[in-house]
Amino acid sequence: MTYGDAIRYLDGLTNYERTHDPQAMRQVSLDRMRRFCDRLGHPQQRFRSILVAGTNGKGSICAMLDAILRAAGFRVGLYTSPHLTDPRERIHVGTDGTSADAAWISREAFAAVIGRLQPVIESFRRDPDGPLTYFEALTAAAWLHFAQQGVHLAVLEAGLGGRCDATNVTEPAVSVIGPIGLDHADVLGPDLLSIAREKAAIMRPGRPVVSAQQPPEVAALLRELAARHESPLIEYGQAVSADIITHDPLGGVCVSIQGTRSRYEAVQIPLLGRHQAQNAALAVAAVEWLSREGSPSAAIRAGLGQVAWPGRLELIWDSPPVLLDGAHNPQAARALREALDELWPDRPVALLLGMSGDKAVREVGEILAGRAETIVCTRSAHPRACHPKRLAAQLKGLPSKVVAIPDAVDACTYLLNAADPARLIVVTGSLFLVGQLRAALKRAEAQHDPLVVRGACEEGIR
Image (cartoon, rainbow, N blue to C red; front, side, top):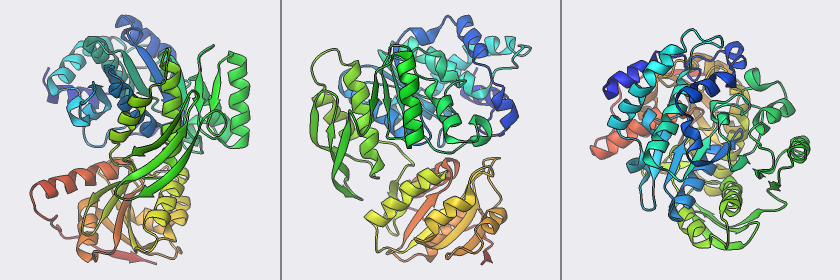
C-alpha cells in the first residue's frame, strides 16, 4: 500500500468530521472500538497515557503536555484531531529537541500501518454496531505506531465528547478536562450538564482528574463524579492557578504557575491568548502527578518555552498582519475577541469568516462584529462548510460591512490587496478554513510571491 492508497482507503470510511450525522453519531458504540483493539492485540496498553477532553483548549493542553514530557527526556506519542492540512499531523512521536513537523509519522510508516489495519477494518464491515469509522481507524493507527516506536507516554486528545469517543478505550494515568461549553449539542446533549457528563466519562476510578475552571453547575457535577470514582480532583482556581505577567503579540504570554507541588515563576509560553495561562497550569498539574518524585521544574520551563500549536491565535503574516484562529464556537470566539481587544486595541480589523453549517454563526458574529470593520464570508473546501451567502445572511444587521466571496483564497487575496499595513486580517470560524489558508500563505511566503486573485466575485450584504 502506498501513501496515496492509504489516504484513498481512509477516505472511503465513514467520516463524521466530513458528514455530520447526529443520529448516527449518537449510536456509536465503544464496544466496537474495544473489539477492534482486541483484534489488534491491544496496542494502547503498551504505554502509559494522558487523555484530554473538553470543549475548547484541549489541543493546546495536549501540545503543552507533549512539549513538557519531551523536555523531560521521554519518548512521547501525541494524537490530536482534526488536522489542518495533512492527516499525518495527528500522529506524532517525538523526543527532546524534535521539531513538530519532524515528529509527524512518515508517509511510509503511515501507509504501512494503514495496510496492516485494512484487513481488520474490512472484517468489521458487517459488525452489529456498524463498520469502523475514519476516526476509529486513525486512532488505532496512532496506537499501533506508538507501540512500534516504543513510546513511554502518549498524550491523547478526545475527538468528540468522551464517553463513546474511540480514545476512551485507553486507561489513562491522568485525565484532563478543559473548559466545557455548549458545542456539538445535537450529539452530546442539549445543555451543559449533559455535555459535561459525556466528557467526564474519561475519569477513571482512583486516578487523578485535572479540570479547568468550569461554570458552577459543571464544577459541582465533576466534584460529584470524582467523589463517586474516588478520584483526586485538581481544579484550576483551587489547587492550581496561574498569574499573567506579560502578554504581547511577539512574545506570547509570560506566566507564574502555582502547581500542586511547586510554584514556577515567569515561565515564557510562545502562544497568544490569556486562556493559555490556564491551559499551562492544567498541563503542569498533570505532569506533577505523573512525576514520581521531585519537581519537574526544568522540563516544565523548557517544554512550555518551545511549545507550538499552529492555527490557534497564530500570527503568520507581516504586512498586513494575518492572524489565524480556528474559533468555531462562542466560547472560542470570546477568547479571540479578548485577545484582539488586549493585544491590538487600536488596530482596525477585517474578519475572514468561514464556518460549518451546524455552528452558532449568529452568536459568533455578534461576539466578533464589534471589532471588525469588515466581515468577508467565505468557505473552505470542506463539505460541511456553510455557503458564504447563507453565512452572510445570518450576519445581516451587525455593525460590520458584510461581504461574500465564495473562494477562500480569492477572499484572502481580496483582503490582502485591500488592506493597509495597519489593518489586522483575522481568519477564523473553522479549523478547516484556517488549515487551507495557512497552507496557501505558507506556499506564497516560500515562493516570495503574493497570492493571486482568480477573479473574486464580491457580493455586499448589509
